[in-house]
Image 1: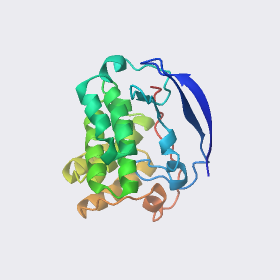
Image 2: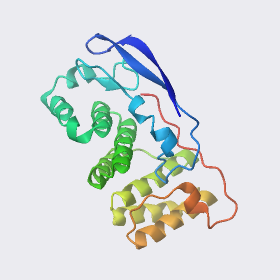
Image 3: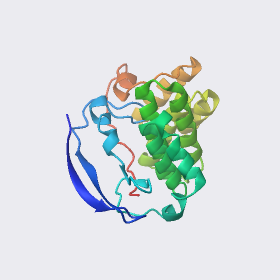
Image 4: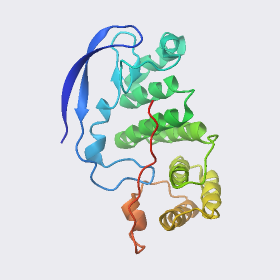
Length: 230
């Protein structure tokens, strides 16, 4: 169970002072999904991951930090329309607006859309989750990946993003590409081969790392890709 405290800060866009909750999350216990979706105890704090100004509706992890271009974007008709549609999208809509504000930072924008997909998963909104994963992949597909461990892991996450979005051909092609790389780790080899089986079965269900590795000996702890600061 999480606890939270509140803090009064000024919005970086309109300078309106507002009180925002600050979460003190629980331990991130439990196995993450193959797209790094955390266990439910941690996801229960997702409504506190972003702060929002009640006046201009600017949204960011820290409301007093200004994203480049955000001061203009929040007053556009498109952004206002996204805000109005949030009655249907709920918390997912907030993460989608955050991704829109981060559109010039594709790595971060992709994570925001993936988090919106996680909300869709929890709501049972497969259509929403599928759409958000496709947009996530659109942000990530052109990134300049290396062959280091963190880059390989992020691309393995992309395989799951594509599979869960039912883009089976693209997911299979990426899995084969990664398996052919010399820098693929033994753990990722197991995960990617598991993904290949799911893809061949046209299976778009969620699976955890623990479930994927349960049939293989020599479990190795896997660390999430390091996230850049917005």
